Length: 105
Image (tube, rainbow, N blue to C red):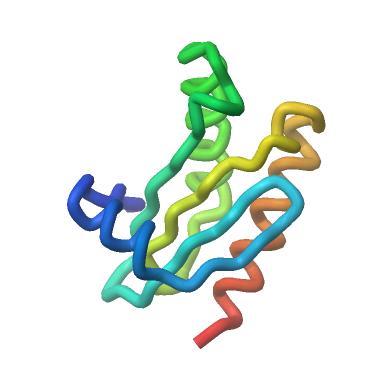
C-alpha cells in the first residue's frame, strides 16, 4: 500500500529536504519509516486543472506499477518538459529517478 503525505508534512519536506533532478521531474526526498509520496504540479506550467489532474493520475499509476520498496518521503515536482514528451518517456524517467533514490542511503 502506498500512502500520501499530509499537507503539513508536505510543506516541511518541500522546504527542508534533499533533491534530485531528472529530465522531467525534481524529486525531493527525506528518510522515513515507510514510503510515502506527494505530487506537485504547478499552475504556471499547466493552466488547465484537467491537465494537472491528468498528470497526477499518470504519476500515481506509475507509482502503483513500480511499487517502491524503499523507505523515503518523496515529493515529485513536475517539470515544464513533461508536457512536451510522451507518457512512456516520462514513465522511464521517473522510474530511473526512483531507482537512483532507492540506491541512496
